[in-house]
Length: 91
Image (cartoon, rainbow, N blue to C red; front, side):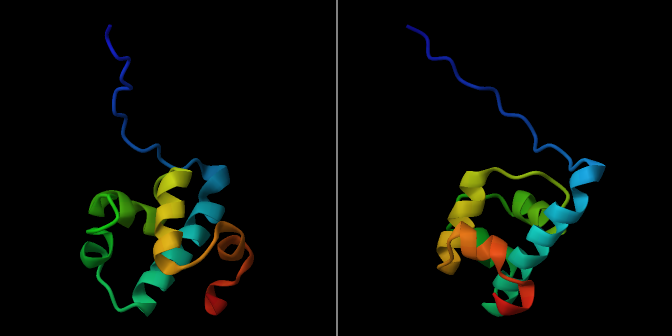
């Protein structure tokens, strides 16, 4: 019996109406990483997220899946609710 595998698709570019929200999330992610003093390359090497995808996430250029966001937040010791509700300066 053949297994139905989903073909890989590139991340979807952010639509105009979502840019502000996705960019804010990206800035928060960048702030958290920089507080640890890590380059993008060093940060993602153990997270199973490509450097290119993570860079695009920080820049707010692509939609990203919830799994990746949760993996990143777990690395920082944060839950999703705290991340969303907390201002960037207080993360």
